[in-house]
Image (cartoon, rainbow, N blue to C red):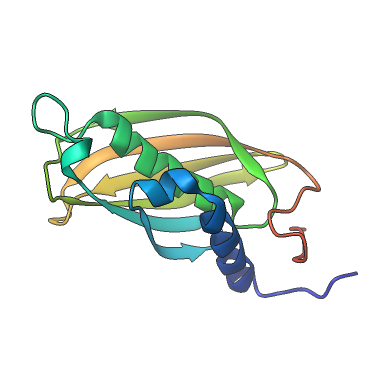
Length: 151
């Protein structure tokens, strides 16, 4: 039996492993600002190639930031977890140069399913979007093979 590790250290190891293989997040310039058991904070600077025809950040990029934040939070326990669905409400536009920050928190985790809430704000701490993700855990499948599974 593997020795128990601190949940924070497990979350950090999962972050490192996931990000090393996450070409989408890397390609968009996403930064992982914080990670913890069931939580994550990611940020992204709105670039020229992220603007739509109205010169505001395309909602798909805001959604991708939130979805990546969701993925890091729900996998932080070291059990492979995927999205089973999500909803997003875009409440304010973001523009070229804005720094968007997504903060995920674990609202519920029971059995194989979880619910995560993500708030996306800009550099002025103004709300840009709210996202709720539903997750499904693949029992017995670690993200990092040499780390213990939860429970």
